Image 1 (cartoon, each protein chain N blue to C red):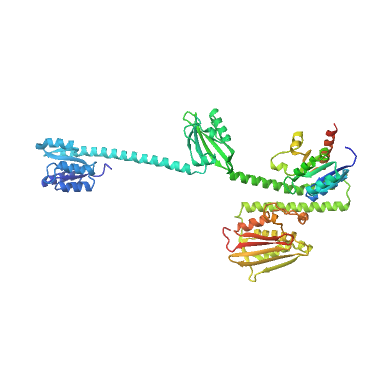
Image 2 (tube, rainbow over the protein chains, first blue to last red):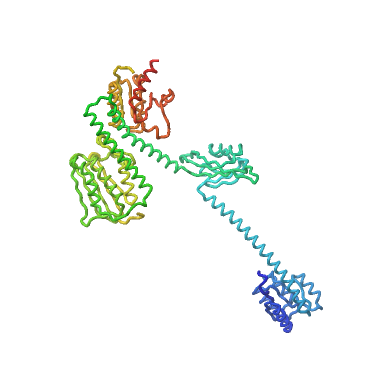
Amino acid sequence: MNSLEPKRVIVIDDEEALRHAVKRILEIEGFIVKVAVNGTEGIKLATEEDYDLAIIDLKMPDINGIDVLKEIRKSKPNTICYIATAFASYDSAIESTKLGADGYILKPFTPEELISQLYKGIEKRNILLETERLRKEREESLLEVAFERTRLKTIINSLKDGVVVINIHGEAVYFNTAALMLMNLEYLPLGIPVVEHFPNEIASLLNSHFLNGENQENTFSAEINRNGEGKLFIEATLSPIKQQNNTLAGVAVILRNITEYKRLELAKSQFVSMVAHELKAPIAATIGFLEILNNPEMKIDDAQRFDFQTRSHSRLKSLLSMVNDLLDISRLEMNKSIREIRELPLNEIISEALLLCQADIKKKNLKVKTNYSPHGITVKADLHEVSRLFLNLINNAVKYNKDGGSISVTAEEKNQFTVVKVSDTGIGLKPEEQAKLFVEYFRAKNEYTKQIHGTGLGLSIVKRIIESYDGKIEFKSIYGEGTEFILYFPAVVIGG
Amino acid sequence: MTQKVRSILIIDDDTDILLALKTSLELNNFKVFTAENTKDGLKIFDAEKPDAVATDLMMEEMDSGFTLTYHIKKTEHGKKIPVILMTSAASVTGFKFDAYTAEEREWLKCDALLNKPISVEDLIQRIDLYYEEKNT
């Protein structure tokens, strides 16, 4: 409470003259003064509001001052109460202090006596209020600490990462539920050595921390077999917990489940090794031919020379298109922001793709049928991507077609989708080949496909493109008869 | 190098690689048999009993070259001739394998392993080496 604020005093006295005299004296001194004409009113006023000081007459007709004092004390323990009494009842005055009054004022009193008494009372009240404030503060901060502890515990327990704290004796001091799950443990007893409960790799590292007093942070990964639930790859980070004098107090172990990363890593390295294998094949073939062509000791005739040159040329062209495909794939994976979404007329894009394949269409003598709805169907997409998509599909329809076969492209708008069908009368797919159709580098190997070069990336690019527009691709295929691809473009592009 | 005409069977599903190797080997005085898959390869091996076999590693299946080598090395004739694996996989898979030591050859069940692109000189050298070691 601010000590500069005017102090509030209540004067409870049945003697009107005295009440007024006191009121006036105190008001001149800067107090705010309230008066009560008897004990009953005094109790009512003094308990309704907070007063710094109360001056209570000992002898009042209704309730005596001691009882008034008791009542005020009950609800306002910090109000400083004085009992005012005539010299005749000095003993009662002493008695009143025993009963809880903070002091007594002997009647008659001079203004100076009264005021000096009251100032002492104010000091006392300040001490009381300060004590109470400190007590409250301590209670609050204890509550806060307790709350903080449960909160921290809740947070650590709900982490997906495992946390185990181990002291210098190898005893678990703290752990969370995720730690148990990741180490495939049912429980972990606190206060006894637990290192041997841990999977070997973690245990041996923990031991090295304790035995050698290793003070470095250490991260490593371990493979943990969970009974019947498959393998988990765990990354454990061991951080030394140091005491103030820099000696090791224990180790905090953070366990992370990195199984998914490992799976991706494996998929990626398999992809890289497939890419390298596929890229090396045309290089190996071309180098093989060039070594013959460049070696004067190797006597070959003109027909062979021409054949080798043609084959080298074709292999290098396929190598180039494979590199382009790979670049497209990484572009699709890395950056969608360079897309320029526009309303694209489908018939133009498809006509252009057909035009680019014109040479092969003529060579194979293929019939091309197109059927678009009369008002001109559009898709909202990036021109480069959609052109790429249709070029890949139509190129496949040409490449894997039979001589004299046909290609059909139809487009229609249907239930919020633009549905495009590209079908051929080509070699089709065996049932066992169908599941792998969109897998990178999968190319059906059978008597028909042997002479067809391809990168094995075309359809996976098609799938990536259409799915990046929240569309989908389906296909129907009969081996030896042909394949039909059905594309669904959503009419509204989300996140384009 | 012996001047006698020797025979070799090469197996690779890449017809261009097959053609280039065949041409080079023929110009180096080899009689060359070719096959595009392991099944045909084994048939020709049994029928022709070549002086050497060179096979691609990854064909129909990732390890079809290993399988073929295994079947050839099981036969009487297979034990007497060099079987050489050709691969473009080794250098990228990170797992380094080679067949220079007896231990490595035992593990790979082949007599040499060559990385693609294959140099025909290397291939011939490996075949010569096999026969030289055998004769001493």
